[in-house]
Length: 189
Image (cartoon, rainbow, N blue to C red; front, top):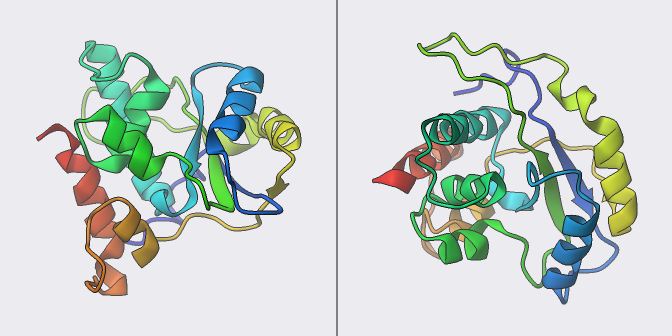
């Protein structure tokens, strides 16, 4: 499902820390202090998967926001829930939030663009990534992190972290993105 060339970059910035996190709650507290709004969040690095998956989860979030049917009280928590493929918020934070031992993460911004009524009607700005780059850079500096020059890719580590597969199991590389997207779709089933 390689559609990465036909859709714009999702407003996500991969960041790396000098050392693995010991107290992720301290990093989250610092991030929350400096983020411009609850539309900014930290996501586990391996949970992102791809531009297409991030936009798919975002579209589901926007539909839930607009209809008033979110499970979580805030859009950042709801996005983590959708990425995690679960109805339970505690599981969502455990799976898709940053954890002790993580050395990288994604800073995510959730645009407030209106989702179209019918398939294909949503207009995603080709500059959505660049529009928020200054705020993202400021957050990276406050966290003492560095920008990683990589975009999200589907990984077996991500599938394990989200509970899509168990240790010792595998999904062929060409099917991984599909597995991530299906897992997101199952969040409300």
